[in-house]
Image 1: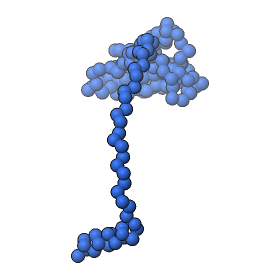
Image 2: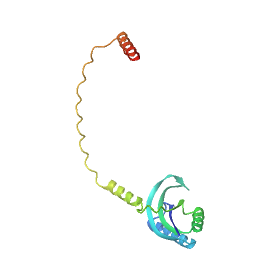
Image 3: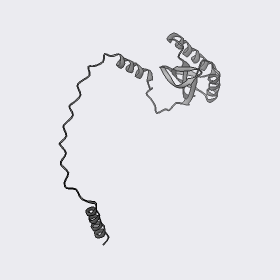
Image 4: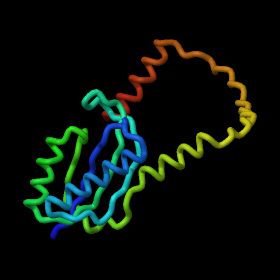
Length: 158
C-alpha cells in the first residue's frame, strides 16, 4: 500500500460539530473504497483565492491515506462528484517530510497575537543631523569642460 495525502476544502457553512461529522463521513468513504486514514487534521477556515460554488471561505482538511492506486482513482472520482467537497487534491506522500505543517496552529497564534493588548507605541528614534552641505567650488564653463575632455581622450588614445 502506498501513502497519499488527501487535501480537501469543505464549505464554511459547517459549524465545528458538523465539520467533524463531515470529516468522519469522508473517513468512512475512504474506508469503504478500500483505503485507511492514518491521520486526519482540520487545518482551519481560510478565505479562498476566488469564489468556488458561490463560497468565499472554506474549511481545509488534510488526511493521510494508505491505499492502492485503483482505490485512489475511485476516491478521486467520488470526491469529484461530491456536492459537499468544493475542491480536493490527492498526491503521493513524500517520505522525507516528517513534520506535518500546522496551518491551524499558525492561525491560532496569529489570532492570539491580534487579540493581545496593543503595546504602547514608542517615540520614534531621533533622526541624526546631517552635516551642512559644502559650498560649491567655482563653476566650470562648457568650453573649459570640452577642452578638458579633449585632453583626456587624446591622452588615452595615444
